[in-house]
Figure (cartoon, rainbow, N blue to C red):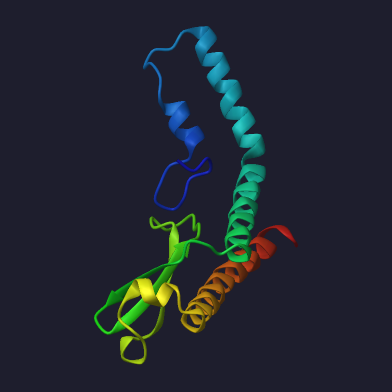
Amino acid sequence: MDIVGTETSHSAYDVFIKNGSEKPSKELKSFVDEYKKTITENKTMFERLSRLEEIIMQLRAMETISDIKLSLVREYIYARCSFYRKEKTAKDIRVIVDNVEFWNSDMDKLLGTPEFMDKAKTKLIKAMDKEVQENVEIYNALYKN
């Protein structure tokens, strides 16, 4: 669970606050109230850190692309690799590399074909870079003013 939540999920701290007895003791209530107050005071910082973490994880993935997987869907060859996006369920990025008519349809052989793998890696980096740049623009708009 994402600590600050997403558009489709609650934050970890909201879930934590809601989990508990319906009739808390005075002592428990005072600590929960202090917790809520601290979260409120620091929520912007948590959200900023979350955005920074996403950008950092994406840049790390882009700079160290590994474990590229290939698949064939209809007449297209797709490449995918790990890539974190907070708002997406799938934690990878996928691109169409080329039409199968131009290459061998054996995915294992394609993995060992430098020309094809260079093309796949280039397209993956381009797609990753687009995602990173969008996140950087959002970050800058929110926090660099």
